[in-house]
Image (cartoon, rainbow, N blue to C red; front, side, top):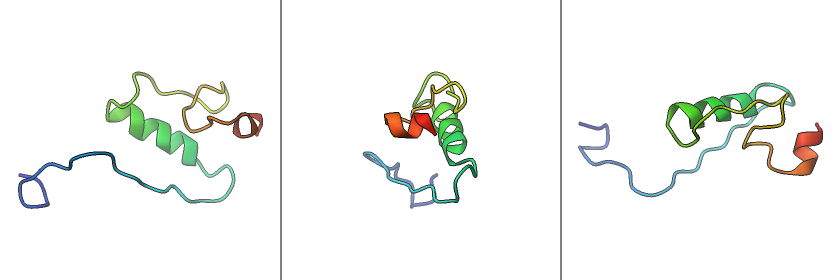
Length: 61
């Protein structure tokens, strides 16, 4: 049984990861997505393979 009375969530869910620069937000996002099966393999910030760093500006940081 789920916490909301036995029904499963339907549709997409939105969350916000908020924190200072270089606090691990992208790494946490990658871990959540990989462990839930949303992505096949966890990417890395240093390698530029994370889904959270989709823009060129984000990858440059």
